[in-house]
Length: 111
Image (tube, rainbow, N blue to C red; front, side, top):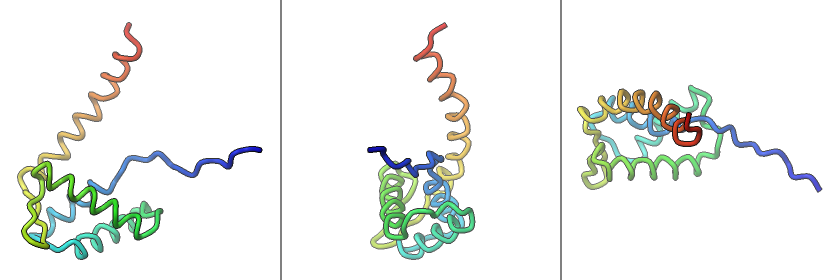
């Protein structure tokens, strides 16, 4: 019996990027307002393919990671982005994208 084809698209996760963009645009917001803003941005990019509840869980998880990393402050039920750190984050990711393939190739395929 053949296995049905996988439906995963293996695209980069855009939830943290959209979450950071929303946090930079707002001074602070509760989780529901943040989720609605991120969800509408993902819908506009046609990247909200999974169910809304599953996406809600992913956004909450990514938000908690950002809080643990110090990129977002939680005050009661509201979240506020640390603007200086969030603005520096895209440039750090761009550098990581350039370095990662070089590092990957050199470790697995030494020449």
